[in-house]
Image 1: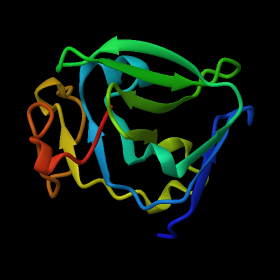
Image 2: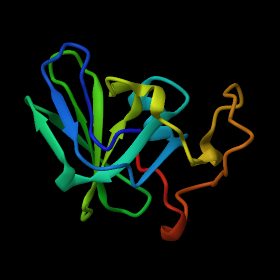
Image 3: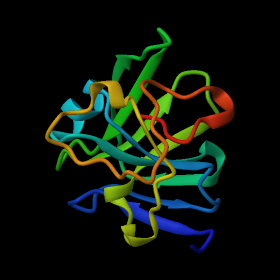
Length: 143
């Protein structure tokens, strides 16, 4: 993949550009991601916050993560597209893979929160699985 990539919401009111390669890419099956996406999981990549330029007004909704810390979910207030996740006290931001202009290069490295996975969801048998969030040296995805 190219280091620089772009994306945005469905209506075009929010655009972003990232100038860094992803730190990690993954699939999250937690109940919060299921509710936020209206699906069985969220596909996301993590990048340094400092490498992302966002244009447009992003609204955030905060939830308490397993750590007890606030996790903010960024979405477009016009079309409702979910775009970002920003964990508290982190220099990283997660970007929803479906919001990429070219999502074909997204390659998940692991599936997390599989303890919450729905029985009707097919998981890639070749990816490592973690019941909850993986230990820091294995972290590949953030809600």
